[in-house]
Length: 70
Image (cartoon, rainbow, N blue to C red):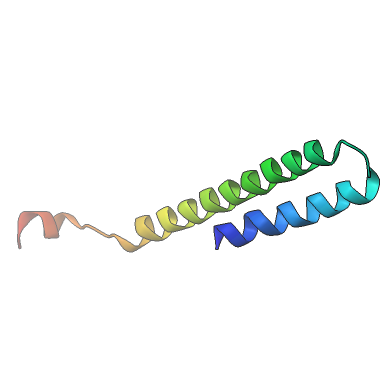
């Protein structure tokens, strides 16, 4: 899933930069799009991790009676 996010952003960014400049800066534009794509993928991954953390905190319920073995 994260690969899809990364490469979608890379493709859109590269296409946008390619339309703007058809010169030797194509490589720089591609490198920028690549960095932006993986930046977005890591952002999505951190959001998923926070969502999983919230679900784990909400799902784990320990009562004092459970700790006493009663």
